[in-house]
Length: 379
Ligand SMILES: Cc1cc2nc3c(=O)[nH]c(=O)nc-3n(C[C@H](O)[C@H](O)[C@H](O)COP(=O)(O)O)c2cc1C
Ligand code: SF4
Ligand code: SF4
Image 1 (tube, rainbow, N blue to C red):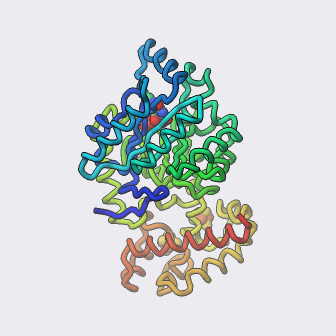
Image 2 (image 1 turned 90 degrees about the vertical axis):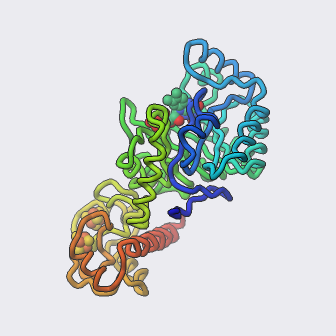
Image 3 (image 1 turned 135 degrees about the vertical axis):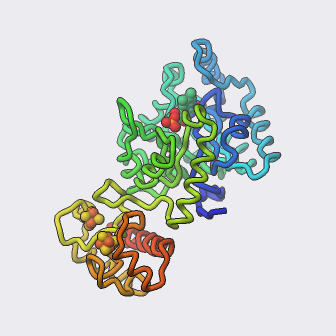
């Protein structure tokens, strides 16, 4: 089995494909039928108090599915106990709503006991929920959201926050969530109107080390790869898993193969193609006007200082071997493996470095560059 090295807190996640929550639909039965191969299955959303359950009942009356759970903790305990009987299940998260903190704390303790993740639903837009202040309205009061996060984190639970992009400032939101101690951010990167807002994933990746789950309109490996290339650690799937129960299996197979072939399943797109700052590892020697200069300015580093830094950080690695026939005389400045280039591939052949090893070296270089730039900037 391919290794992905994804973990949220102490919870290991076997691959970067997640099932997203759908109220009244995604429970453990749904996981068993459509998401056993996933790395993570997020069940719910579950309503934890009387107010949210009343709202859910009213939503149900108008024909939309909801879980109405008069005894939510008992119900969730049963669901989590069933996971113990499954062979090689995905990691489980429970997506929850409540107007009060104490049921959230109870759910956090329950999740922790079962090695599951708790996810706060700050996403729901159903009027019956927003009228009582749960779901999306929580994004508008960052101070309160931070207080909820830090209270929940005191239980020791691994915590995710489900958000919707473009509602408030995505950068401020990600920083607030991370500062309050959450482990993951699950972003519905929707564009008002229609489509996916990859920008929301990129700007979040550039300011946070949270585990990022990119969500919206992932239906196949191409759409998943777009999320990964903008900085997502994982992608989640809701409607496609409902419409085609084979979606998750197909995605897991595809990402497995891609990881085996390239060694870096979520390698960034080049910066000039919209990739996040991790892509500095694939940048050319910055001698021409292009998108890199905006990024270097942000970190307060000159092109010459950046060039010196990249050379210094690569000094002891195979990236400095050979390479005379490449565009800038060394593999340090070379593109990602999925960009076809016979010159780079010829050099890799000569120095005996496989494509996967090349990408692992570039990944390490990317981490070193960003650590250095963040240190200089004092962030
Ligand atoms: C029927 C339905 C119910 C949903 N219920 C929830 C929910 O309870 N909690 C939540 O955070 N998101 C909920 N979502 C949002 C999805 O998790 C996801 O963010 C959204 O559908 C976009 O992803 P997709 O393009 O893969 O469908 C729901 C979506 C659908 C379609
Ligand atoms: S340096 Fe090269 S790869 Fe980087 S943004 Fe500029 S043109 Fe693109
Ligand atoms: S030699 Fe190929 S991989 Fe290297 S910078 Fe030039 S085009 Fe990119």
